[in-house]
Length: 469
Image (tube, rainbow, N blue to C red; front, top):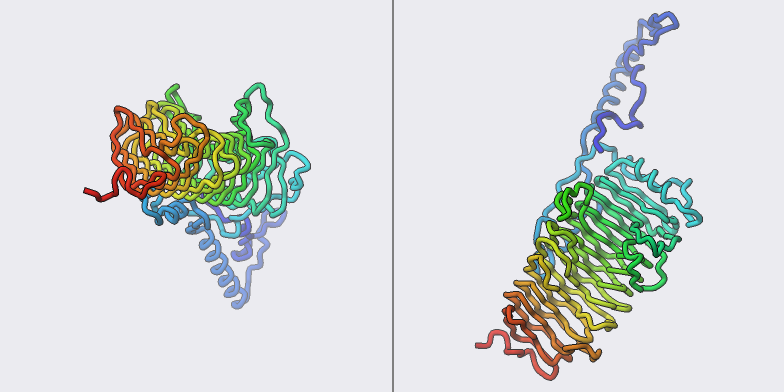
């Protein structure tokens, strides 16, 4: 927040540097009329030094956050063999801040209970609202803050919330009826928001999906730009770990017109354990990356792209280098819903460490009204009881260098690696489908090319070696 005056700690009385112009009770000047030459010289020198300090502090300074989302995007996008799409990798311009560096950090007041003995939602919201944009909010390591409501960051700018390992824990079980929504952390609008180094714990004891309580994510991001979720330990959620979608405060029509799409969101180095719905959801988003996280015991999809209005979209979305373990109920990536388009989707370098408990494939793309294209599915290590990839209604797809282990789960059409319908430009190359008995089942309106894949008992020569004439 720009300041147009000197910071409070520099609001000193400069009158002694002039003639002070003191007035007595009758309004007459009482300042001495004569000063020695030394006194006048000393006063002038002090005046020059103080004015220089004030002017220097009032000059806008370049402040670069230590964990800004754009640089994190660039760092991750620079490696690997799949180019990151969109402008998230572009360098972020430095933030112009006239606030003194010492004024950037704020520590949670000791008067706010930090032992989870009582609900401090209201107190924390009041404190965070009192802190200027451009600040870092520090919590204390080992503290526990009971949050039975929503911690709100609405239309904030360049704000970092550093938990330092603190835990934010709910104590209330949501009602089964009426069905309501509540988030533990809600970021709505604004830009340049970082939430890092904290635990967030709900009250769901098991990774079981309860449709009556599904709208209780741990973190909501609604229409915000440049958001970083880093080193957050989410657990025991009734809903999603992170729910990403548009800011709907300005929606004017039922088709979603007027919504502000979230853009440049990075979720990294975090964990989601015992989650009642999805690990991460995109209901409409652009330039999203979920990288280097651990998901365990997630009750529904790990990453769900489910656009919820006709004018919304999902573009430039990447799910990379994540580990999926524990009880895996459904897919690693699922895409259904509506929307204008779902394009430039990357799933790369993910590892599934446990066998799923249902017949859902690791990648499930359903044929819906949205235009779907440019999916890159590479270098993943998956397990399945049925199929590896359902590619329905999606075009220009690369399926390459994946290793998928097929186990017998009694599923319908088990052992078919890829189902492809209603799409063109689908390339399946150099995959190891251990235990599969058939490479691909193609619908009448799909076009597929394939080479260099391995099925049970074969080399990497299905249906032929790559480069064969």
